[in-house]
Image (cartoon, rainbow over the protein chains, first blue to last red):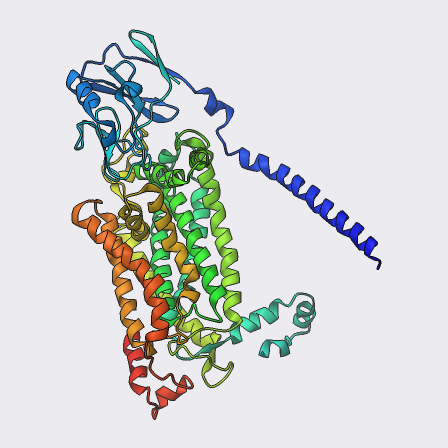
Length: 169
Length: 420
């Protein structure tokens, strides 16, 4: 067999493998992507909540995208406590102003950033939330202060439609 | 080996066997030469096969009545318990069967650890076994999600969230696993599908496990290579069949005790409350067989490192044939390893205990020490021990220590007492 002929074979093999790999990839992708959130799940992207009946010091929990959202009307003490914390004392430094644009209302995902349990209201060492699963303590701004959770509880996208209604998502 | 000379007696048998040598296979399995000193710790392979078949058969029946939908799953399980003929029995066998399966597999694994069954030339058998064990954990976890109770839901949430510890792609992977933004109906239906699939994958791997076993043959309590067939072996049938059968009967008594007298003792009361995405149970605990790994997860204060430690604790087992540097297989002839072995057993039991307790105070401290020791055993003690340990002289054959005149008579008696 001449050397030139071998090279031609090699090229054909490589080209065949390459086209084959693209074909296999293109066939596998729909099988993988079908597991991602479908159109009906994505359609439930936003929810409106009436907050007129929430008094200061109370929290309501609503379901958004299958996850609990805490809407807490904070007391003055809680707000000042959240604002007085120095940023260098925080594991995940975020200012309270950036978490609650309207300081009276704290709207956040009620999901512990450790492994996804729902933390308990008004518990823990920082008067905020406490996760019973693996012992994470959050402050009155929902920021992680102690325990295994890596970050603060997430603030979803939301807006005040009017004084009594919040739209989440 | 003898099966190569095998010819079926009947004319039809010969005709068939020439076309598909099933009878040759059957003959190999019956005549398969087995070390004659196998003790009862060796009967758990057969027991595990029984467990797998029990789970497949009862699971198949349950799937005829179960409805994999977030709105109906919980009620359909109650329907099985109350309305379906013998539904309670079938479900209790399936649920407790999972625990019995793990009980047997842990004994099977620790038998391998004691007698060095993972060492050359049996590394592939061992690694296939570890893969089976991993699949068993996946199947058990997904099966526990199906009744859609509180523990199902929150166990699924916690375990799937483990993947969110992966940097950058973690959140995307979790959303992909869920098929949504939380554990919900899409999660349930795919878990049901995979829960149905995995036992058959395990069945295939069991065939490979046994095939790989039949190449070198069984290890034995003395841990030496034996000629086969020879004076040191007996044919699988009837000797091992009868012994395995007797052990299986004993095992089934324990099994039946759980099914008929305490069917819920190994479960959690919270799982008889329907899943509620707004309320997390006060104390989330996995099933008992996952507790040691759960303790390792919780003993590390960092999320990513905790997950890494937990997975390493399992995968480190796959590297065991190379971490254990000792040429001697059986712990009977390794006086130091024997002690470290029992410390490891105690360590794993302690991890299991603290895994069930709240992760705080003294429990957390104990969990951390036990986690550190677990890794120390595999990564430091075993590699060094192979070089430092003064092992006892091993006998030349299985028969030698039994017939006396051997310097290892005392050691052989030790094996005996361990067996009892």
